[in-house]
Picture (spheres, rainbow, N blue to C red):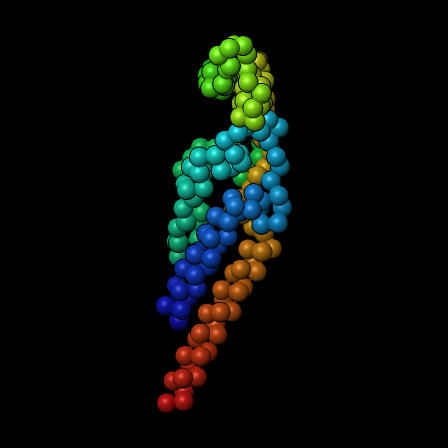
Length: 181
């Protein structure tokens, strides 16, 4: 029985780890879509820009429980939501990103003006977003909406039940095969 229980726990870990990973593809916590960013940038979806958060999620089995953790410091603020306070270091970062975005734009050599291309339009919007953040006063609070990717949900319970029932069927089939002999 102990081996069966360990197999069920391991199967639940694998199934839920896959589901939590798929939340990044869905851009939602199962069926609850994540709130869009106020200032979108050209680097893609907020939760998938570098993939660091997604790759940092690990699971660990301890006795009869499973625990998911992340090594990145911003995981909990995204998963639970909350507020962050603007620091001088953040402002320097946003100014650096602003200058990086504006210097990457393509200028016409003849007219020495910004070319009207899709790429430049995206970069301009991206640069404007960084400038908005960079101009914030130190101490300003920024509300980070919840973009949950791990946690309790009715579909988590359903996945656990499905894994349990599948394992129960395997045990039943095994017992029947033994009894037939």
